[in-house]
Length: 325
Image 1 (tube, rainbow, N blue to C red):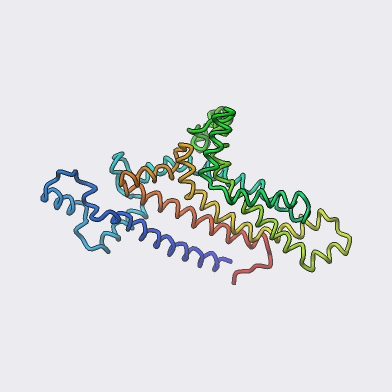
Image 2 (cartoon, one colour):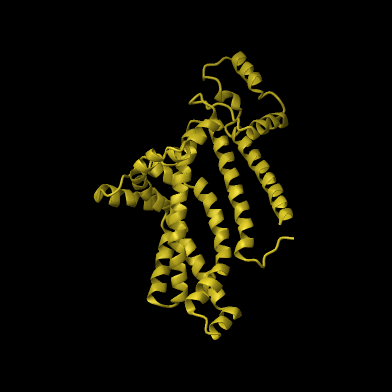
């Protein structure tokens, strides 16, 4: 097991090195990055001086080495627009992204598992057919369009929930300000509901279909038939024998989707004016503030790699037959 974790850690380091190369390359997408640090009327001498000061006149491998050293230390330079350290700005937005990803994943899992299990145990029933229709529709609807519909119907027409903004929840909780956290919990959740649903609807639909197909596959194997023949209660057969084995592929997908929701909510964050990393990155791209883009990409990739490492380790808990030699 320890050898497996060691190999996975080595693979994770290699992945992060690849991400660092891509993040470093972002700086050169618009040509010579020197022109990002000078005004339009700068003279040739000023441009050359800035190029030397920033090290852009050095070989590319030296520039990458300097970037990698700074990335390991969390130093991606200062934002060109804000004048503050880029990683600091990204970390300030990270709690909002975590909150939205957590709510989206909560919706995608807490509803998908019972729906998928019920659909599998009631195969070819009205419940099964309705669940599959819902899943197909949910996967077909673009998240941004669904978000706009939620804003128009639930927020504007019915006036039930706020359509933009955020009330911080994670920050006071991490600071130990529990009084502030509980006093703002209700309002914070109200702001999270609509973007959370829009974020999690696609994952909910796919997970429902995946849970159903996994349960149907497991319910058809021999040991399930044997358990039923021995008179084991159907509820025990489903939950103890079938459910745990059916969750292995689901955990794989859920682990990937956590990373996706952390990094892929850019459009949802913009639709709901949610102050997360995705919205910050979009703004930084429009302003050619590539230091922020680099910091955001590396941070999100790091969490994605860590989450997938945790998912791989969880396999041994779900199925003791799995051994990593």
